[in-house]
Length: 197
Image (cartoon, rainbow, N blue to C red):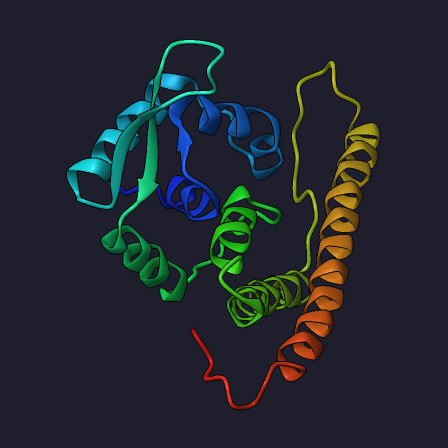
C-alpha cells in the first residue's frame, strides 16, 4: 500500500482524530479532489502507525466518547519531508488533483518547496501546450451514424475542445502568476537560512 502522505501533511499541521481528518477531507479536501469514506482513512492511519510514522493517544472534546488522536512521530516528519523533496511527476490531465495535493501538503513546508512544484507543473503544461500546437488538433476523418450530422459534430467538437483549451490556458496563467509570487517570496527569505528542499 502506498503511504498516505496527505494524511501525514494534515497531521503535521495538528494532531487529530480520524473523524476530524475525515471531516477536513470531506469539506476542504474536496477541493483537492479527495472525498474518501472513513474506512480508507482508518486503514491508512493504521498503515502509517505500522510504519512508525504516527502514534495515538486517547483524547476527546468532552462532548462524547474519547477518540484516538493521531500525531506524527519524528519518523513521520522525516517521511513527509522526504516525500516533499521527492520528484513530482505531473499527471497528463491538466488540473489533476495530484498537483493540488502535492502543492498543499509538500508546499506547506516552505515557499521553496511550493516553487519547485509549481515550476515542474508549469514546464510540463507549457511543453504539453507546445505539443498541441506542433501536432495540431482536430476531429480527423469521421463516418458517423445517421443520427449524427457531420457539420454539427465538428462544431460540438470545437466547442468542447475550446472549453478545455481555455481552462488549461487559465491554469497556465495561474501557474505563471504563482511562480512569480513564489520567486519573490523565496528571494525575500533570509540568505543565511539554507534552502530546505
